[in-house]
Image (cartoon, rainbow, N blue to C red; front, side, top):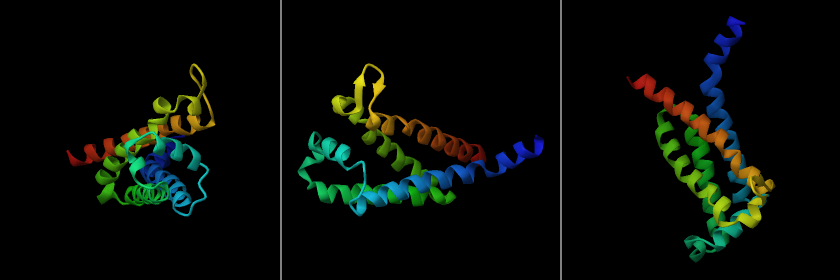
Length: 141
């Protein structure tokens, strides 16, 4: 059991980095090429926010590229601080539908739709980023 725990400790940060990168690059690229299943949710949010002054197609490409960039930056230790900062901005924007689009994200009190679940799962990504950030802080001391 000690060997297993030791192995886990050695691979936890690379596993978190790669996992975040895969999710952000994959989902972001789907947005860029126009086949993301999140398109209706992003379109609904786009239409009720200040970014509606930008064409949706343009916004979707830039939003997808922003996600791809976050994913790539998480792969490199040297760019982790930038990645975490961009992730914080991303998380703020992606949580907005829970409040601005309640008919899309909730079927009842504390009962999320599939779209709501898609958003709430970001708590795991936030926890992963916190773990990476905490490790960076520990190493800098």
